[in-house]
Image (cartoon, rainbow, N blue to C red; front, top):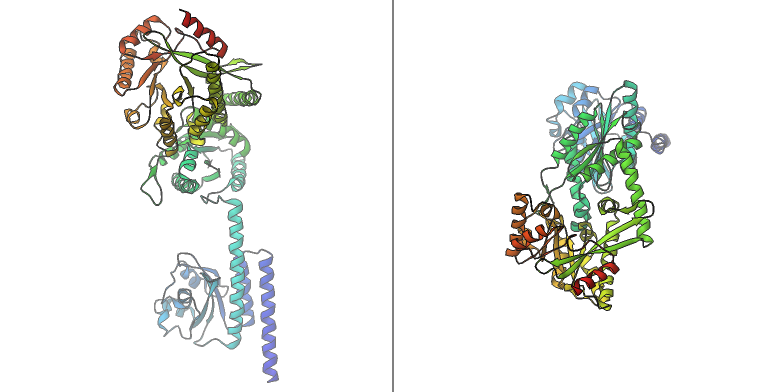
Length: 614
């Protein structure tokens, strides 16, 4: 009895020593394959009559050899990718049943019917396999002992397997945690694509290789057009769905050697090794084509159409490192957006100067807004037949101490790109309503007020609530106010702008479509949405007296407005001849230098007094 007890004590001490060695390897962060190899070799050293094996089991139920130092190489290789199942040898069946499977004779056991021809020629005659289960869910591996003669496992082997199964659980759990940490550190949580950190690592290697070999490389920066609208109108969960669809499509259009990364938000980067600038532009167009098909939304029949604006940079011409390439690709990408979106643009060094100028304008505009240095001018809107004042349009003006008068077409695009447009729009609407109230309190008759509102503000702000509050604060009627919007907003299918337009209509606030006919005009939205006024763009008015086509187009727009019961206002009327032609076509009202230039509030009061006196 004493000898048996001593033997058992020695065996337990050996198992304990093996456990310490394996746990130390795990703590030191050694790779899973190395830890499992150490475990198998330790078991075989303690029990030379066994051959040890560890197979991993993936989510699809396929096995993959991890360690088997003494099993024949051909046998282990043949197991790669086999499926677990109810009769899949000892390991495949143990994983399927989620319980140990002991086969004492491979030659006769039915579990090995399909695999004994693989095992017997290698001298393998018995196998005992135990599944490695993490928590209560996943079978992640099997731990097996093979024998070269038919037999059952000895008691020592059973105690050893019990300890080894626990060690496997610890090692696989540690490996899972390590891979999760690596995923969080190097991969985007939504799309699974490389993040900025991994992109920087790959770019560093690719650019160094290109420099040593004298080859080219290219970088593309993609920004998904109007993606914020998806998040704002449909929610971030739907936005994440769309990003996943987009990433899969972009990956499908690239080579395996290319890197597609997500920087965050709606920006993606493509790193192209061995690629010229010209070839990079072809890739950019290929990526744009990959986004052409509408993207289905999970759980509904709805689809969304997405496009991308792409900036293209070449190494080493446009930058010597990732930061410089990203900066210049970003500049080129914004040029693509300024060109109308859904296109790609090369980086040109002249763009740097334009960017610096835009940044200077943005800083000065922020200063002007916060220090009350902006102004409002008002242009009269008159009836064409008797030139009677029917309203004024509020126009934002900016006089900068260094630049002088800055044209709106120079600073409004900067405001839209920088996010200042909402604050500017809100200021213009608030100041315009306050000025109309001041005129009324002074006995100056201004029948109505028109104010431009950007599409961006309808998506990101509550325009209807702001208008309602301002009208109440200044004691104005809703019919005193008309908001001018672009055709782009009217064609927007998202619900938020439509709901706000409907609320404005129900309040009694007018809605005017500015520059009608210059964009994507559609008769359907005129019927569907609460429009009260059309503004005929000055580009049609300018050559009315000389150009028959402009006369035909103007007549068509006026006819559309009249047939739908809408007021039509012509912009940019400068001559009596233009006025007469518009009057003959049935145009209701107009504004332009013929009647009055945009002017400050005090000057408008004088203009009204002069008009009243005549």
